Length: 250
View 1 (cartoon, rainbow, N blue to C red):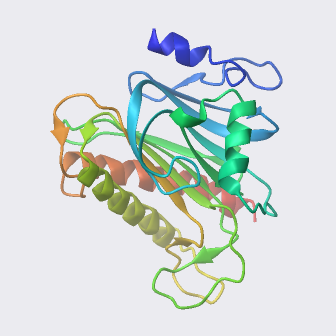
View 2: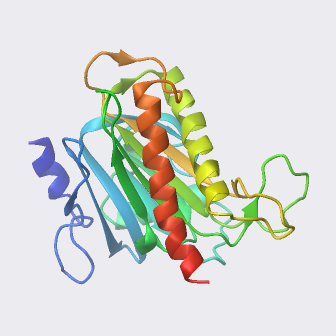
């Protein structure tokens, strides 16, 4: 019943060209599907779960800890400038057929269709799927005091879905692991800032960690745990996949 509801969501269940269901692809995690489409006047990567997801979100809509059934990564123009992005995002979600209260959403200026995705598991631990959209127009290095003269919409966006019941502390732990994996991918691909420093991200990166509440509680998600090892592997490979497209397009 939950899957059927997800797949028939009004307005958001079909690409603008009528090509089929938005959630056409299986993530590899039971009840979680995803797809890319043009809806509501914008292009999105959307993830839908038949069970509520327990999330930690750094981004513009439904930030912090929340329970949602949809995650939306929305592509906007690099010149996007809005005095109230949360209100504008709510309007976008409504006209695209999403329930704002049950949706987490983020913005990016990167090409949505250039996303990287990786499904991983380690040592009998939970399956983890990561999606990353990466653009490098505003590369930065955490720890550098060099100020940015412009804040662009989130340029490396990371979404991680874990098939397990992470505690809130473990969700925070997972953010650390995912961020370290992203920085490692940038390092291994030789991505530098404009002034020649090793880039660790961009000035406006965002992350959503989502847990499917199944099984016993998972209390830790650092790299030494099975959950954390899978998070690191999935984010690392998904980031590299998306970066390869961006670097090749320069």
